[in-house]
Length: 269
Image (cartoon, rainbow, N blue to C red; front, side, top):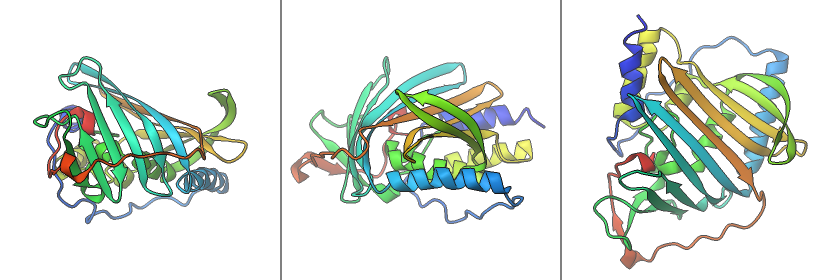
């Protein structure tokens, strides 16, 4: 029964298709056992840290490693984001890729993308933020950093793993799991189908873990999601810095932009 899991996950991880179709309308919560008092308290600590960050601003850096089908991709996603104002700037780098760099600007409910195949260097594609979809396992729609926060806040069966030092700051590490609904949040329909097939083949939710590091001030300083499934692996680690520091965003001029409905490529989530 486990053999079909490998090609299903590999296809979901490495598929390069894009779509802006609506997602999530069929989501329903899965049944679960009532959490223990300690688990509930740990989960609340993570949720409160995420909620506080979503009302603030921060610099961030994501290290993403994707491995499957005999290929390994190492991406970095970095920038600054004012989560309270829903605006920010993002740079994506994939050393050695056919397109190795992309810039993205989030503002006014839109995402502007530069470095899209088929467009000139000075042209920005623009798509509505709520229409962007994720096309890879544990990736965010057009690298939206708030998507990672939503998944971390939804982790379940949370345990306290002790204290660690993260970027020179002592922080409590919490570990939990992501259920299928959270894992497939805002996934493109074709990728969601692959993930559903993999879950059905396994007979349960896929084993996907999440970690959150919260400092003594209740601030989220690092987050991680990871899955290692029969030779297909993805890990996303996001570190946060300069919490509360203003984030400046330069929005492309209208004459620099072109509306797009499809954005392909691994750089774009």
